[in-house]
Picture 1: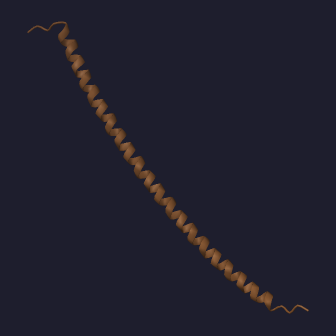
Picture 2 (picture 1 turned 120 degrees about the horizontal axis):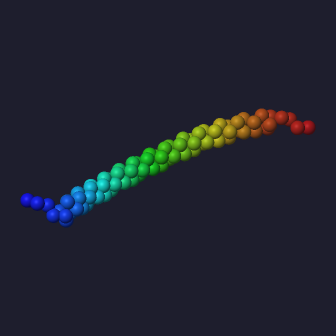
Picture 3 (picture 1 turned 90 degrees about the horizontal axis):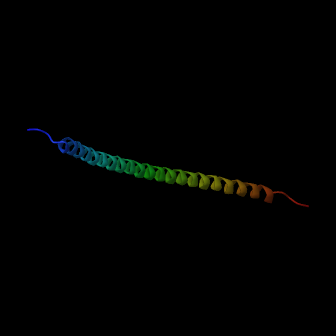
Length: 84
């Protein structure tokens, strides 16, 4: 059979449409993967921040308890001073 002038261009157009469909799917899949990774990363960073803040609060509580004890000891020593 002999090809008409339209047949090669129709075939090329069909192949380009298929390539476009494949490319659109690839972009969609890549975007979904990136969004999934970003969400995972954000959750990890939120968990990290939560752990850091809890550790900081515990450290601050420990420091405050030591500070209160130091002031109690200082108060006891000051109360022992005989003022004339």
